[in-house]
Every structure is written in structure tokens, then in C-alpha cells.
View 1 (cartoon, rainbow, N blue to C red):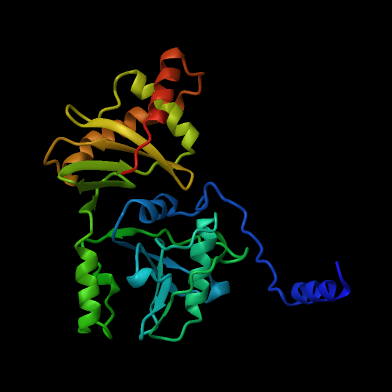
View 2 (view 1 turned 180 degrees about the horizontal axis):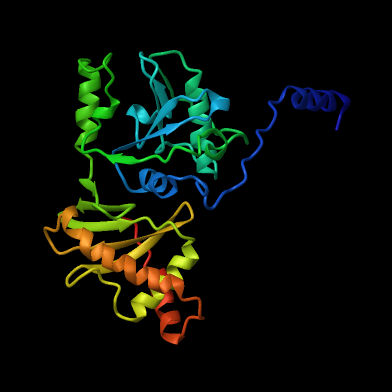
Length: 291
């Protein structure tokens, strides 16, 4: 290499932007948070929902609204009145969802009122939700049938905002929480009814327990409500049942509580799986669904 080319190469290296540090992958990013299962549900299966969380005293101590989705896939926004909304469903995926949401939340606190956070770059390693949320506050998810939570007083009559809202609502899958059963969500999709249940235990523990239930031929919720598969999301298992046509969320409380009893009994059994349960586990795991 000539001296001229070597000088040019050194100059290029000197002016090149430093490489961003990569965030370590977290298979179960929300572990340790009081609202872990509902955060996973908001990120993966609920189209429209909100959850109020509180930032710890070190970061100001105010309330922040976590939401499923914001207009234009914004990561966060600060309303004219100072209220902060942070999306859990965005195009930013670093490998640690807790860091992604926390980075957007911290940036949103610094926004000027009436502006949105729309940058798409990945954050660098830093504080996670576990570091910035008040652990004394147990959040509660609220499922919505519309995106009305997008509307602040300053935008309630904006024609463009209302058009965007209407278009987004046309794509909402009807979804509702099952009364009396934590983290279970009914939905109507393509003319059929389903229920998806975000389980809070370690996914391997769940699949072992469910294998015992399945091997005992007790994995259907009730007659006609059959188990169709499960999927993994953020380190948790989400089993899915296809329901009797026309079933509503309110009708699922009793059969799902009965299923919870069967699962609790299976989870308490720490003996090795027998051959039937091992076959059932392999079959359950192979029935991955995208629903």
C-alpha cells in the first residue's frame, strides 16, 4: 500500500463514527417487574391497551402511560399538558425490550410539550424498566376497543388526527380481558373466537406442567373449546384455545379457573415426566402458533 493510501486510510478511520455498543440479549426482558405478564401481552397480543406506571424518585417520580401503539409508530410522545405516553409496539428491537421501552421513556421525559419521539435508531446499553420504575406500584392494564387514548385535549378536534384514528381502528382485532383470570385475553379473529393466556411462570415449567395436563386428556377448556397450540414471547409461554363459536369473554371465567386448578396441580408435581407426558410435551411444543 502506498504512503498516500495509508494516509487516506488513517484519515478515514479517524473520522469514522464510533461503533455503537450492542445491548445484551434478554430472553425474559421484563422479569422482576410486577406487570411482566401484562407487558408481554401489550407488546405481543393486545392491539389497544394502556398501563399507568410510576417512575421512581431518582427519575422524577411522575406517572407515565405505557400504551400498545402510537400514531405513525412513534416511540413516545409528550402531550401539550405534559402527559407522557410510551409505546410498547414499535419498530425498535435491540434484543432487550425492557431497555428499548426504558430508553424511549427517558427520552420522552426530556421532550418539549406537544412533540413526539420518532427516531428509529437502537439505544445503547443503559437503564432498563427495572431500574427506573417504582416497584411499589403494581400497574394494571386496561384494554380498549378504540385508540381514543391517542387523543389529548389539543388534538380532539384535529381532522387529520381523527382520520388517522379511524383508519387505525378499522384494523383492531376485538379483544377483551377474561374477568377474574389474570393475563387471559379473549379475541375474535377471522370470524372465530380464541383465548390467549400469558403464563407468568418460567416457560419450561409451564410446558412440563401442561404436558401432564395434555397427557391426561384435560387440556381443552371445555367441550368444543380445544387447545390449538402455544407460542413463546419475551420468555413466557402463551397457550391458545379456539372457542365454541360465539363464546364471549365473560363465559370463560369458570372454565379457565378450572384449567388454572389443573395447571397448579401439575406445576406442584416435580416428579420426572413419564413417557406419555414426554410425548405430550413434544407435541405441544411442536404446535407453535402465530395468533
